[in-house]
Length: 422
Ligand code: ATP
Ligand code: MG
Image 1 (tube, rainbow, N blue to C red):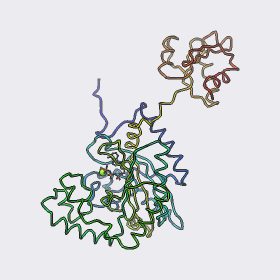
Image 2: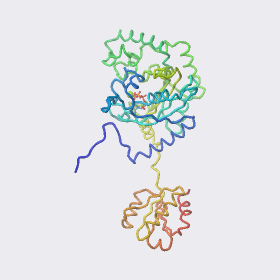
Image 3: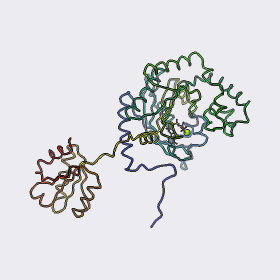
Image 4: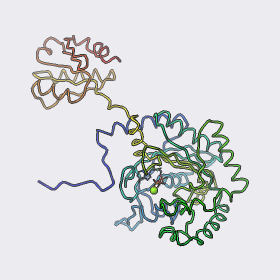
């Protein structure tokens, strides 16, 4: 026998035992997004590497060490498997002039790729649902973005998610704060770890995001960006908070929330679940007004977020909020001349009334077929033998009620409707 092959480490198969949960979630997400007027957007999984280095920023976890980048051996192009969805969407929006005299509310879903150490809630291929609202200055849209997420947790029955918010101001404010941070950290060089030292002059803001316990006290007392914000940024931040208060949405102001990507400004936020251990952020997002111009578009406004779908499903599972696997309605067993043909006819009729039908294929004794019917978890079994073909009848068995009746062909649909209650 040939050797078995394995999938790539950190990239998971989603098997039928779980895939129905994804379909269920995707159905809820589709309906929810439509309620807020968002349109679906589909961009390629491969983009040119420079799209990500330019938009995400050179000195970020993603660009420094997490990207799957390679040279196309056929033409030498530098390509990268997308590590996130915003860059591709904005590239496409600019390329196709979607913001010409218009605003856009867009959403996407799909796999993202990051070369990280795989663990629970952290994979090398994972899935995000993302939203981008383009052309709105806010803070009204910033409020609706939070509102729609808190509505989603309600729709899904997800409890225990905490909202953290912060304001990252504008470029000049961040530059002033950056200098203050560099001065501060320079005075405490001995506490900085290797990564922090490397980032001190390239991206000191990201030091605030460190997970290193030994540096927690240092970063807690570091200069806060909020103290460097000017009037416009503060008024945007206050407008956002006042809006959230009016909507009765609870939040925690977290001055150290900086987000992992360079393109953010003003409002940023994260939703943190209590059920996920250290991989606890289910959703992250914020405003990224400068990105459109940075990718060759006109100056404009942008805000969005991405939900990690594996983490969302893990939290729902921990809270027992995932549905049962849906049941198949009908399994048809048949044996003898003309029984398969009658089975096809009946199955087509039942499906036209909206029922799901599995026909037994590959023969087998009635006993073997009944066993398969059981294993399929179907609500009803219809039995067709030669006698039934002759009499134009079928036996209808209900597994749940443990009943069995002979029904005239013309009455089968009504009988099934009655038993399945549809
Ligand atoms: P983390 O701090 O956990 O690495 P991040 O800041 O890198 O998260 P974002 O780039 O903001 O994450 O992505 C948005 C969401 O996508 C995250 O909040 C998380 O739910 C999910 N996510 C990010 N990376 C992974 C991964 N490697 N595996 C599974 N989900 C992920
Ligand atoms: Mg990360």
